[in-house]
Length: 345
Length: 275
Image 1 (tube, each protein chain N blue to C red):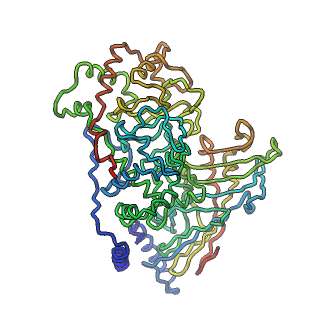
Image 2 (cartoon, rainbow over the protein chains, first blue to last red):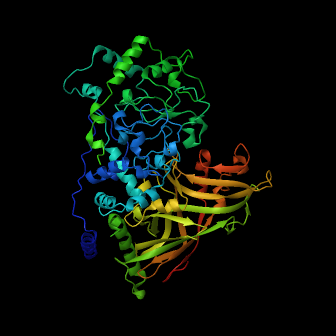
Image 3 (cartoon, each protein chain N blue to C red):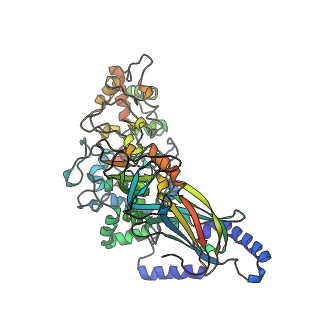
């Protein structure tokens, strides 16, 4: 057995001709105010080379059928990896989807992905946009075929996965490692709750907003990830032109009709437009909707129904203003400017 | 070697096998300890007691006649169990397999299994939750293999466990209509199931001897098992086709699928018995 191992080791070194590279495990740190990761990251623990490869793939247009659309096309770093100003993103052949591009951040801390929970595994979620005919319209198998023609990729996969080949699984794992490391935890709010310098940095309005948020919003936008990864019907009137059934699309259960994933609110100032279909252009419009724009239906979240049967979250104009001031403290300049998440060719 | 991480289990199994052999079977002079052999599983697809033939209809208990055009499924996580209940777990990262009726891919071949006398087997139907990528190895990309056999889901991300497609007629529709049953897990329901089957005769694994475990898979059970699922009841609104790919039906089919397998017989001895 040992003899065999030794042999294969020697032959690897000889055949591949790659310099021995040290591929170190990255230091994945759970921020002090965060809950434990929802994903088992040990299963595909990020390494330096795996992370770098994932980042290169994220920015590579070869992940789409006609080599025009990369992940980063709809997930731009400066907008917390959303597609600023686009209700629906243009995918391949200039087609439009039916949902607003969600932010890519703190992915390892979430147990469900996409507005309908089409995936619950960080290493698998990339399958959905890659294969969606209106997004990238490609297959993993064919991406592997394309990348094998590029010697640089052959080398990088080999380094990232200990002699690994360019395969569907390794493409997914590299993207998973990149997304695992994409942690946004250095907003003004984070520094406030962690009592980091410059100390108590919230003004009175932001404090008021935080208190209101904890009373009125935090039961769904829970923990410092600002989502409980659940699916809820928040009373948004369905758009008859789309008739998006939400979670029911995945589960096939009528009880899931019009339920969509509670989104994280981190960097929310940067991720307009809002809601799964991007219908609201501003945070003010969102709060106006929560105040008095809801439609009743069988699956409406009970928390949004008051004892007297009225729907919505009562808010004065002043409270609205304070909430928005608070929400803006969730903007993380370090995250959106972090060169680690940007691929320079 | 591939057996490293289950070595304790394997060793225990070998030890037991060795002890029982040395007392009973001294005359054969067999060497079992620390030797390995292979095992074959042969999945012979049938329908309601007859052979499954693509393009030829069979009738179920709801009086629906199904003409199957495609039947592919994933079997996984193979375990061999000896008379004392010791389990030899095949290495997980190499324990995902596909069967394909059209292409006559029916054999699962396990290598380097500790020599022993096995009385029962356990395996899964589909891919277990949170283990999506474990079929990926340096030698094989399970995703690619599954995709080539139409066993992946890409709008929701994962594997189809069973693809069962064709046309059907029923008392309500004399004209054949399309049906598609795609079984799998989604992020709400885990539809992976395992079955444990007792072998009618011992499967003897020895160096140079490959037992072949011949299973019959009754595909009729998928819709016509403990729970009955009528295709006609699942027609789309236009009444043109029946597609079963989500909701309660997937849970029912998962449970029905555990009734689908029986071990018909076991071949012992050297060489390959099928293919």
